Image (cartoon, rainbow, N blue to C red; front, side):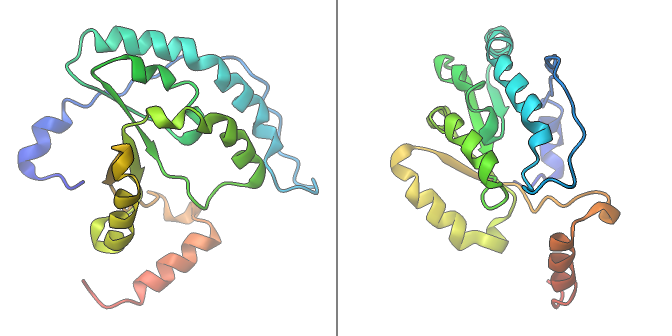
Length: 180
């Protein structure tokens, strides 16, 4: 989604809201564990399951005051965002995590999957210029489901010194390409 100078007033209408986070244990990662699954994150995932009612309450409150409310969440928060479907002026969008989830995280997301149908569409970290054909295919695949697709990228990290090796390879390749 490109923004022109004329759209700057629209940006001022975007508001972000923080919700209180439930208390949870935060163990250190076990770098010697046989499994590379980040099991130290499990308590935070368990705590996130307690957010449904606070989110629903917030959405009811904000939707009564706003013409349109957009909720952006990842697939792991689908359970908590399910009440979006009961509010006529609220839509939810899910950023795609395709290809970046470990198996156990995918297992956790399986529970969330049943609540994914309430979303209005998906947000992809790409652009029509880069992956137009893929985006067209994704849109065609979900046409019957009436889901919107938004390409808002590519969104790159702001601190390049904290990029993983995988991203370094991508940036190296990109730097070798001709201009434009």
